[in-house]
Structure formats: structure tokens, C-alpha cells
Image (cartoon, rainbow, N blue to C red; front, side, top):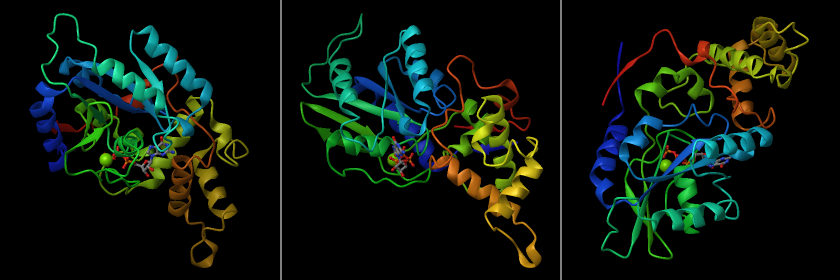
Length: 291
Ligand SMILES: Nc1nc2c(ncn2[C@@H]2O[C@H](COP(=O)(O)OP(=O)(O)OP(=O)(O)O)[C@@H](O)[C@H]2O)c(=O)[nH]1
Ligand SMILES: [Mg+2]
């Protein structure tokens, strides 16, 4: 099966190529609930620029796990910081990292003649790129909303201290699309969510694997059977169709929405001491992507 990337994502890849020569730094924005699984690792490496990693939405992730992730990235020689992109205080550390890194000349490279330094914010859709830019700029310069594919236009946003940031649409690569089911859980895949029943099932499997199965209300009491749990959840929430039949699709949608909004607690679905479980990393119907 071949999967075409949406036009605005293709445009983002072209813009990255176009602007790369005048960019000094790449800020790689990942989701703190799934820090490695939401990276565009190979792609960022190939750009050959100084880079820093920012773990967005850390207010939704397990604090202890986030600390472990920061240690892991640091052990790998990477500069990483965690933040809540909506909070101007929280992004302050990143501001100073960006300033230092953007003005640092990579070994073997000539410093640019221009005074201004430029950074690109690169990350998957809906991870918080435009929100972060607004917090860094201290004003609402970029459009944001809680759905993937909001940024369509590409714009430079000026910061104080001779810095400019590029707001880009979120991008996805072949590796990320292969784990589309998991990425959908953190609301990053463009397109309509169709099979929420399967998505909530995937969520329950991931929560079980990562030792978080207790966060689903009633899941353990239902013998950790997803079928029993989702029916029980529908009844508890009073999600019933005519005749009192439990509306399990509505229940599944609600479970996912609660997880995404942090209503099940602060949960990291990818542990720092292990990569994404093999079973979930490789979806059987891996789509091929045309760039
Ligand atoms: N809880 C939480 N929500 C955040 C954070 N950062 C962004 N958001 C929310 O995530 C949603 C997406 O934010 P955007 O800034 O539009 O994301 P984007 O990466 O620019 O998305 P695209 O342009 O569609 O690729 C918005 O509802 C933000 O309020 C964060 O650190 N924590
Ligand atoms: Mg955006």
C-alpha cells in the first residue's frame, strides 16, 4: 500500500531544504510521552546542523520518566530539555540553550557573515511547535490548535537578540508512519480518527506493557480483558444506545480523549530504559510513503 504525504508536509520538506543554508540551529521538538518514538532522528542527523532536543508536553508525561529520558539523551551526547510549550517560564531554559547553540560555530564550519542567527523548529504534527514559538516570542505570532496539520504557511518569527525562528508544518517520515497507530494516540496523525475501538485497545496494550494498566478505571477488575473493560466503561459512564446497549465506540473515544488530555494522569508510554515494544513498533500493514 502506498501512502502519499499531504501537500503541506511535502511543502515543509521542500522549505527545510530551501532554508537549510541560512539556518544555524535545529530545535527538534518531540513528545515527552514518547520521546524516541516521536523523533525524526535520521532526518535531523542528515541536516548536519547544531541541534537541541526539546521534550514538549512534559506536563502530560511522568516526571520520573522525563528525567530518565533527559539523562539518556545526555548520555548519547545530545542537548535536551523538557518543557510545557504553553508556559513562558518553562521555555526560558530553552531560550538560553537556543542562544548559545545558534551562536556556536560547528567544528570545521565558517561563522556566517550575518549578525542574525536562525533556528528551525522541526517536529511531528501537533507536538507544539507553533505554541513554543509563541512562548519564545512572548506574543501570539503563530496559529495553534489541538489537531494535526494546523500550520500550513511557513513564516519567520523574530525574537529579541538577533534571533529568528522558522515555524513549519509538522512532518512525518516513513519510520514514523509505520507506527501510525501509536502516534495517533498522541493525536499527531493527520486525517480522521476512524477506528477508535482499535485505538483504545492499542492504548490498553501499551499501558499494560509499560506497567500503567492501573490507570484505566476498572481494567484490572475486568481481568485485564479489553473487551470486558470497554463494555464496563461504557456502562459506568452511562454511554448507552437505545435499549441500554453499551456504546463501546463512544467509550473508546472517551478513553483516548481522556488519555490525550492528561485525564488518566501523567503517563509516559515509551520508557527511557527500553525502546517501543517490538510488537507495537512494527505494524503489519506498513504503508510506503512517497516524498
Ligand atoms: N499540555 C500541553 N499542551 C500543549 C503543549 N504544547 C502545545 N500544546 C497544545 O497542543 C496543541 C497543538 O499545538 P500547536 O502549537 O498548534 O502544534 P504544532 O506542532 O504547531 O502543530 P501543527 O502546526 O499542526 O504541526 C495545542 O492545543 C496546544 O495548546 C504542552 O507543552 N503541553
Ligand atoms: Mg503549527
